[in-house]
Image (cartoon, rainbow, N blue to C red):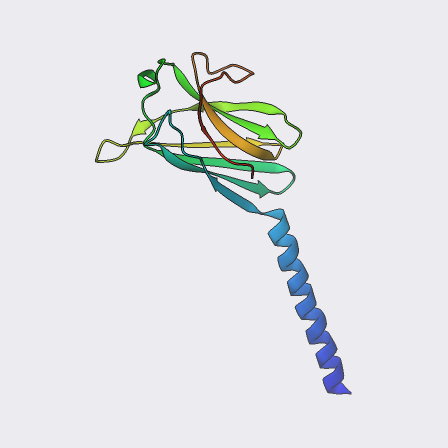
Amino acid sequence: MKSAIISIRLRNFLLGVLASMMIFSFTSSITKTDFSFSPLVPSARGYAKVEKSGMKIFNINIRITGLPEVNRLQPPRRAYVVWMVSDQFITKNLGQLHASRADFRGKLKTSFESTSSIRPAKIFITAEDDPSLDRPGTQVVMATNKF
């Protein structure tokens, strides 16, 4: 009788731990995807990571290496702009991407962080003359597949 009570308590405890782990995994999920190869910037490589944190806030982190200076593109532009597209096809300007020479070999590296209340389905980068646009131009430099 005493061992049956202990078994039931142990089972309930383990079920509670399992349920907590499942809930935690759903509330702080991380999705990472690489940017596709781009003939416009063939040396550039990178990824975008989206993490849901708490109450419908999505943290977006981007890391890219080998991105040329924006004024060296054809045609030259003034800024790289990061965009996201939601599942409802809402396109949002997340901000300007700034490249810096951080590598001892002179390879350009950049990182970008932003937050959104809408879950991104896709992220892409354009080259623009005006970084404050509310619609992307046609010169898409890099893009992820759908998350």
